[in-house]
Figure 1 (cartoon, rainbow, N blue to C red):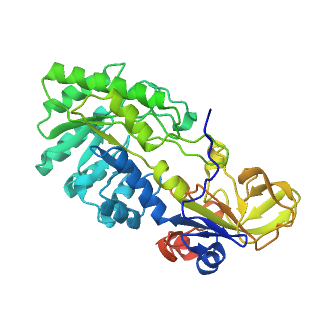
Figure 2 (figure 1 turned 45 degrees about the vertical axis):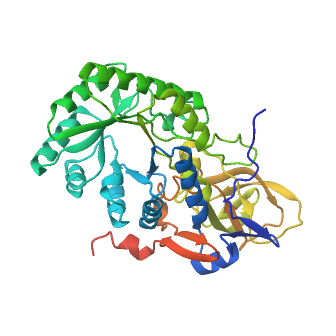
Length: 422
């Protein structure tokens, strides 16, 4: 029997008198102090999910996937908990530096790192660069040699595993823009070239097959292929390659009634069974840590026919428009005894595709000023958010034990206008 998720809210979420509270604070008080829309992040839930991954792989490395959501405060939490961090752009690298993460615990991904980004990373003392192309291999070798550094690297391998997920989230197949093909022999050639470069030190192989994956067989297939490839390389070159980074991608439930995703312990057991003893395992969870911790809070404006309009939309959550991602929402600020009717929750943007939740039962007396809460809003919402229609991006507020802290402040119109020459 398939287990299903009934509760998609952060662990400390509670209801009293019809009002949702997060981290011990009612949403009405949060909206009054910080405005809407806003992302409310349960810090204790975030920390607990980090610890669950550490418990699952006590002898491995947990690299938090920064692209899901990153801010200097989050970097500080990760550092305090002893996790590592992966970044994939110069901007994410800047946040890692600003947050005080030790450079040795940062891994730099990306399929098109610039010379400036490589120079900055190597000069800072970054722990590892994940090589993604022959061009990058040559560039990094030259940068490291010029700086007098022997830079530690992993090689990103495309293992030829097609994960059961949305096409836009799949990264392990032969048609991926990422990494060196295993089947075509490019990965083996990349290893040969790295071993020949005195300014590079090969510390591991890396693969990532995609995101929002529930099927552990996909992870097992990739791990098995990568472990066999690692053993083949060690025999051929008479070297030891100590680490196998098998990426992230574990999915989460977004809706009540969704199948329960595998736990970190479930995935760790599968990976360990496929990888020989003595090889250090690394994983890169992002969504599975931050996704369920955060609630997006909106204020209802216009209620018209079957549409309920809120004060945010596709600029703060583009995922429904981009991928057809599904969310739920609830009336979070009061009790209603009015029978529900089916509505579509839409944003304020000048776009017919600006839809947050389709065909959702909400109380029939929903009115302007009510607060709607959307769970599972922590991953790839603030990090994908934009300024469509020149709408400033919402803040991220961390809540814990009745206290609220600004993690990312609300953008202002002045922030937007500052970009224009005057």
